[in-house]
Image (cartoon, rainbow, N blue to C red; front, side, top):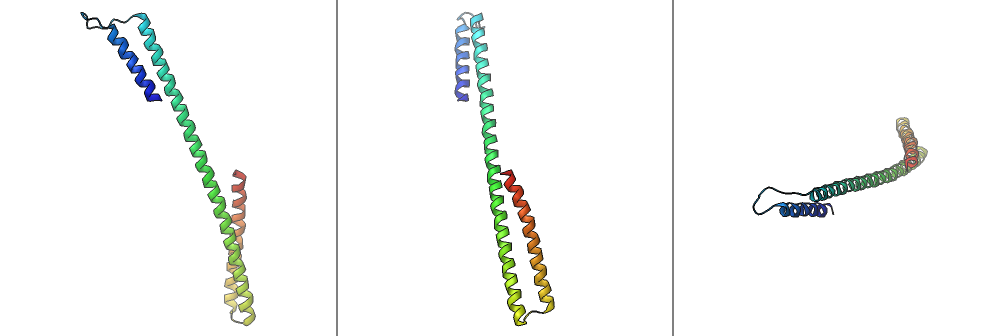
Length: 139
């Protein structure tokens, strides 16, 4: 669109200049009307360029917002998945602690290690839930 307008403006200017030449004289002879027309064409071209720049900026802004929304959506999904995964690991560790503890297969050190893992996972879940709330607020 802009290229077409620019080509049209150049074409009009060339026509005006070639009409201004006389056969005896090689210097352009331009009337006030031709000068005014050239100024109008130049103003139209500049206006079209400004509008094209505005449209390009708006398009870039839309693309940036869409990218940000996708990233936010991916972060929310990832955080939810992390919370679910850690919750399942806690359940498995507690089951192991109960089953093996009842059978007497775990030493006191093993029980302490399992309890430490459970506490770390619970702390991570709390942290992820806080992060999830912040992400959902942004949404």
